[in-house]
View: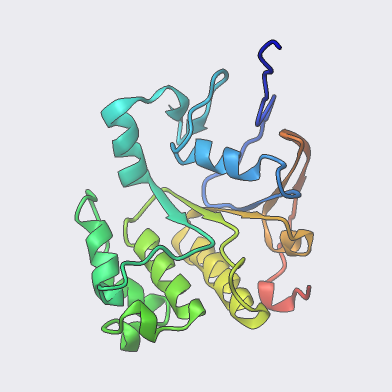
Length: 219
């Protein structure tokens, strides 16, 4: 049998403006996470260009790619990936040791509502609080781009909504570009820009001139 070529993403083409809150939506296996990993420098493209802030990150290799992930990108995942033997504050501080211009870890924890919980260990925090630590860890890097892969997937409805509000507020107040991956189409009204992906291709792209506050969205 001959080799079979499988394209995780094919002909994906979209733009996101600086400071926008964007949602990439589609069913499982559509290629959403692959797109996110390419934007974050976790995967590389075999053809085409990937430009972030005018820089072709698709061509970066070695130390340049490491530097890009370290200084320009903040990641938030479905699972929190916290060090269990470190406090919330120490988890955030640990990530900042390799950053060029980090923010104050304690101040960022205050901003995400965990100022009084900063000395607690992950096991002493709820799922929502642990995700807030993970978000604080990403924000304290002071990244250009915050990438969130199903950030509410492991949370209950109310907690998930509070996390989405935190991400939406972060975008609005900091002017930070935030991209959220989700399979939940009900969330799309909260975004400035919505990119629909199906079978590795962009099937549609929408703009919301008046994004809906997440508090007003039900699903």
